Length: 149
Image (cartoon, rainbow, N blue to C red; front, side):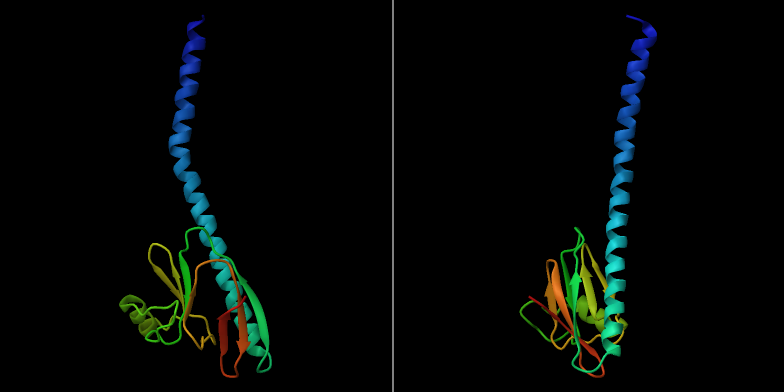
């Protein structure tokens, strides 16, 4: 067998190994960034839907399909952080975030991430753990949100 061929095969195996070791981390980063960007677009779409429902007449209802990215454990909508419901349990950190920053939506992954959506005020605190249709209802001075069927 030719010595050059043996070194070529060894070099190719080492190169493939390096690509797999270092490339896997980059591929994982790209996937995570893609998932985060997709969810941020969903939040932007929700903000636009709330704005649209707010501009409609009182009592108007619109559905919104909330899609979960893979790393999200649950999404909570909160008006009064002290109001306990079947899916929302008051937590010192979340309560402080609502009071300090006026967040009305929380995304819980490895840590909480809050959003303030203008004109959105859920009548009841609730959390969802899977893809859900949300109902946005114009309640006059604000838009109410609740989990649909």
